[in-house]
Length: 151
Ligand code: PH2
Ligand code: MG
Ligand code: MG
Image (cartoon, rainbow, N blue to C red; front, side, top):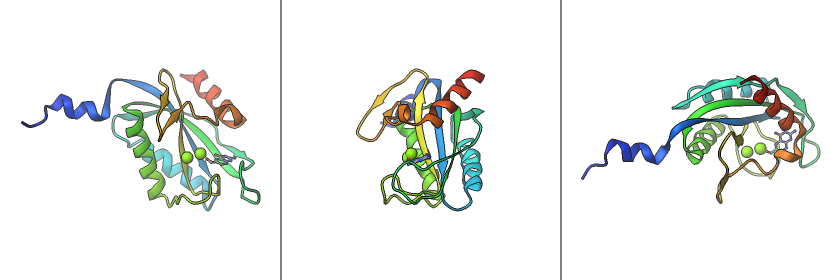
């Protein structure tokens, strides 16, 4: 028997949308270009729209020494995608923008992290939200404040 429309939708969607906070980071190559393409691509994720953009901060690299400075930004998005589906979409954008996964916390062209949801927590082997590093990154905390203040 063919799957009903509702059971197909249930695999990827939630009943209602919610606000997610997505961190953008880049410390290799044309950093502004990577962030700008990331915003453009995130705006085209299905069932998702950008609600607000934080300012862009230049930040000291956390992790192995000798890396270039980062540009970091955060977006508030409204999405009805399931958190793991959203993660897949973000990882696909990272791959398209030349991201390779080698050194932990090493330099990267584009890093997209789900930092928090307004009403959901996730604890799975592939995704933890709120992001475990949120409390340790003052620039994320500031950008999250900025975004929660405007919506
Ligand atoms: N991301 C990392 C490792 N180190 N440092 C800064 N300044 N900004 C980041 O976004 C960042 C980092 C791994 O996700
Ligand atoms: Mg990261
Ligand atoms: Mg990441």
